[in-house]
Length: 85
Image 1 (cartoon, rainbow, N blue to C red):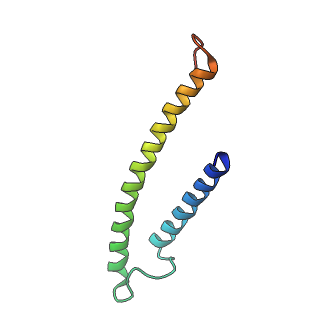
Image 2: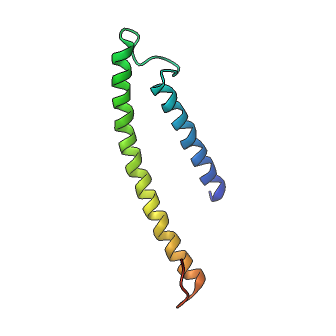
């Protein structure tokens, strides 16, 4: 795992974001609805917004966990009584 896994994970996130942007721009691989493209796009955007809400919660949790792990490890490296900032 390690740094290579982190780099790959963020590459995957960026690739997924590019797909979602293309879908919102109407440039996806296939339309949300062939019968009614505008209504399909509206429904697709709602799906994207719902998914984004879920992913944002996960990102917030990862950020909080990483901040705590950083603070604990930085204090461990610095030693007792040494300010970390």
